Amino acid sequence: MSKKKSDSLNNIREMLGAIYDPLKEHRELMESLADPLKEHREMMASIADPLKEFRASIADIPNPLKELSTSIAGIDSFQLLKNVAFEIGGDLSFHVEGLISLASKRMAVSELQDLSYQVIHDSLLEPSGTLEESLNNLIEEIRSQKDPLTQKLLMWFVYPLIVAVIVSFINPVVNHYVESHLNEDKRSLSKKIESKAKKSVANSSALKDLRYVTADTLNVRFSATQKSETIGFLYFGYAVIIIDRQKSWTLVE
Image 1 (cartoon, rainbow, N blue to C red):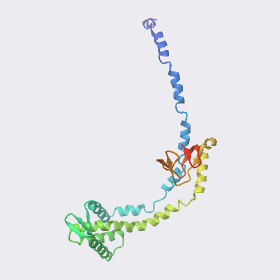
Image 2 (image 1 turned 135 degrees about the vertical axis):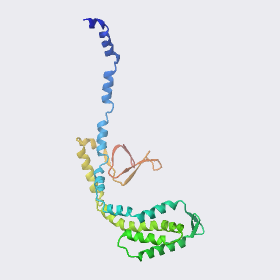
Image 3 (image 1 turned 60 degrees about the horizontal axis):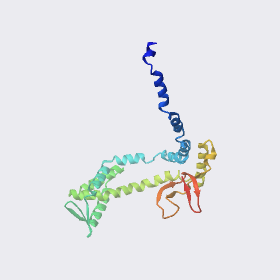
Image 4 (image 1 turned 120 degrees about the vertical axis):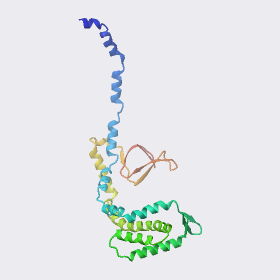
């Protein structure tokens, strides 16, 4: 009783608390309605990239060159060629009379080319059973040149040639593995995309305004004219909502 008497304003405070925020229920209602398109956006997100699984399957293709790439990167002589080539690349000067210079060294480009081919030729005369041994022989031939700047110029010139040789072996293998997973025609892929989209939503009528891009790359422009600014790109398999159609243009979301 004493407690109740000591807080005679308790009922008043409770009443004021109830009317202090007369918009509370209204705000709660608005929060529930604040994002009426939430489900729609979630649905669009689930089907906007129907090729996601396809790309993931491509990413899961075993890399037949992974060990080769690792082994090449681990060869000291290859790393030496690479490091020197990148180190001096910005310090080289080229002259209109066909000369190349590095610090105090000036040399005719044709002379550097002939010397590089001679060094490569001589290195191949040494017995080698692996790529590493071949590169080591090449480095030894380059180091047989007495001038350190000539050695660096040779390494700079030879490095891209070595890379080109390695790539010439790698490309056919890569193409074989990639093309074998990309030989499915677009019509078949388009059907898979539509089927996947229908399975992704409970109500298929929600897809009636959707269309799927069949071009490899589709320019999205600010307005319906070729001179209009390109504001984005859509790629094969992407989903869009049709808002309006004209003769040669479609307004999409």
